[in-house]
Length: 461
Image (cartoon, rainbow, N blue to C red):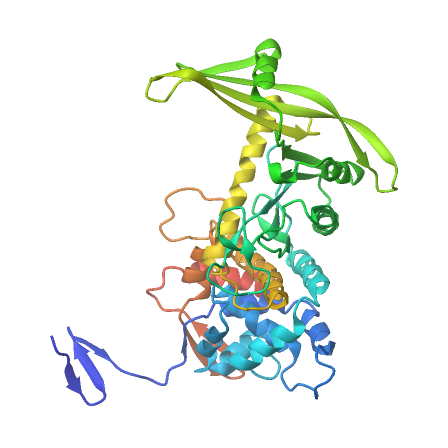
């Protein structure tokens, strides 16, 4: 059906589409982002840093560049061209994000991020800690009384590109393999390190773990529990945790150990034997082994460490078909936790939740295919993503239980795509009167009560 044309408007099914001069902003939630970022001197410190000494003084300071890009990351739009979405009303984005001069162009954004590169890693990590602390964020403990810190490598698929650092990952794709660490039951991003795709997960990990422990201790005084998978099964890692007073639960890499010795040990010594179904037997128990490591003072040390096992023997498959040879599954875990064997196993399985955190970073924030061809710039992008990731997590956690629309069941965490879609990319009517700015939320917006609560929580904290 052809729409009726009336002047400059188009009518179709009793609706008329027309352009107006009203200030309706599609991303009103950036006002909350600006309120959170405005509580520190990070931008001022960045403005004083000159990353291009051979050029004249920039009109657009580094702080404006970084603020703009963090705002884009919070909208789930890391590609440089997304900055054009701020072109139609730059004064709003400038004031809400705290930009001093003006919103940069796509070209300026790209060039300046290239210039800054990986030079401010320590400053961003310190700002992340300060942002969490200044907003009263205390990472939650799990039921066992520890604050969990989940560290894991997650491949970023950047296939069919010629970016620096892209190589074959263990997942069989070409890309990067960054190490990421999350703290608390909520999953705040505390540290990350961009790595080439082919780099082994243990390479560089000892230094990374020392850095992560130091950051975590600035955020919480509670006991820390580090959980890592079998790629980081190394006595050096366990030594670092022991020397720093941390607890750990690390999946043991069997390497060349045979399964036969484990099933024999389980059948002889396990006192926790269950049969979930006919043909399936589960053995849970503990053993102890000596490990050698080098202490922080450089001396060689020996420690006896508990290793918990969960061994599953299947003589029939799930359909009742008998197997000619029993199927043996062996899962073993290094730990210094004083918990029951089955609780140690369950605690490690909870480590799998960090896969959801990876998905929020890679999919919800659209960061899997990093925007630059330079590895230093991509490292900067991921480091700025730490701030954006935690801002979205803070907003999501503050929104829980606050008159949420159509909430059918209890949730512990709001996924980032929900926060971006409903609270960041929220249409607002902007008016200015008597030196006041007002964000008007329509009566048909079911998230308006939540938004007002979140805004008030962070703007006036």
